[in-house]
Length: 154
Image (cartoon, rainbow, N blue to C red; front, side, top):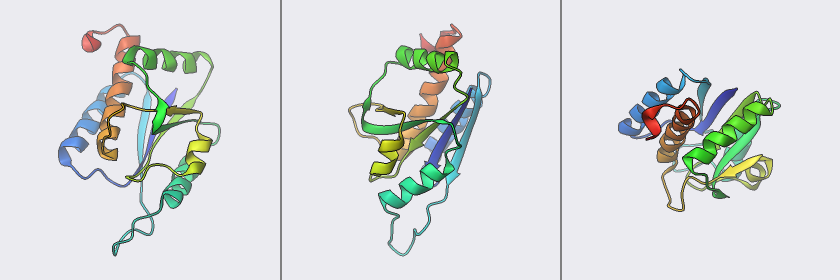
């Protein structure tokens, strides 16, 4: 199964970018994994792309047939073990690709929420969308180490 993370814009803080790169590198040993960074159109001169514009950009980047997981504060919260079991379930169902969508600071447009096969919340706390990227990649790595019975999760 392939996991693809779709993000809008580059990570602003180097320490977060380093963490994402570290866990992405580790995750490559377990599964097919990629990160696609989409360029926000219409940004600049004080204008920030609307949630609707961001949503269209994200949804256009999702390959046909992919399972769509949207990170949203209204989503289901998983323990690390339950998330690992969810990945197992997807694999047993023959799902070939899962795309994870993280929106911008204003959250997701209704079209993105409506297109989701699964809404996931990382916590009841609020994180920057850059921090959510790091947490998601680490949790994917953790899920695969749990599946492999490795010590990382302990």
